[in-house]
Length: 320
Image 1 (cartoon, one colour):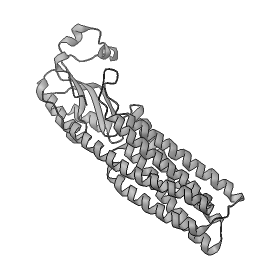
Image 2 (image 1 turned 30 degrees about the vertical axis):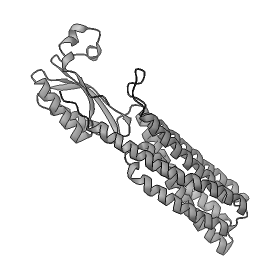
Image 3 (image 1 turned 90 degrees about the vertical axis):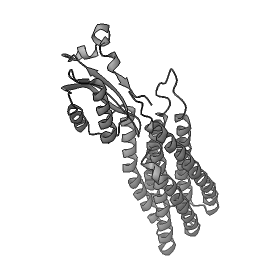
Image 4 (image 1 turned 135 degrees about the vertical axis):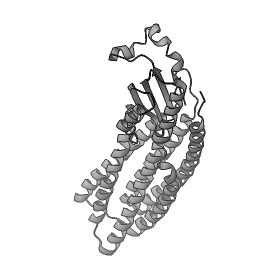
């Protein structure tokens, strides 16, 4: 039965492209972080120093995402047969956690400021925030195309996006404060930024946890998948259907097909074609059986060699 290598090659290209984009975005962000910290001390602007703290989480997120890609490219070994690809999801989970902490910090800081608003040098604040927005927009443009391909890059992209919104908020706040002297506007904008970041953070957190818990990927309609497998020629029933993801785009499936009248080779090819084209699954283990499992325990009884010897050659695994 033919091997299918298209997924492996494209995944390598995507990963290498992501690494270059992240490296460039990290260089931009780190440079501006240093500028913003210095400017924050010179202008005595707490708003800029707070934004610098957010920018620091951006730089950390980009660095972690980059390390995740490097580690994810390490080959599989006897202890980790899937390799280190899932490090990408751990990085995305960490990034989401950092975003959540920063958003909560912004809300807490805003609460503190309502009673003790600081004196803000609005012109210096405005100038640095404009530079920060330009840097963030450039980084967003670099990362946008890859954010749909990788949860890891998506996490880094959301960090930069939330900081861009923060920069816009600082610009608006600086302008209003300059013309009106209303220091409380800075606090209001901080609260709005916090509430804007939290829902997006929750979505990324939920996606990452679902993958780590071996949940069915969100893009898979499990009922439709089950019906499509049952509609394959000569398939009378299915069991042990499991679908999970190693990374955001690396989907795996195992299933037992009861098809006593089937040409096993033809059925396998038909299933491969359907799963890869209709559901985006290219890594699969199909067990085609001539004897129907009558009980759940019977399906799991791998200790009986006589039960499985006739079907061993019909199992075929596509492993990344």
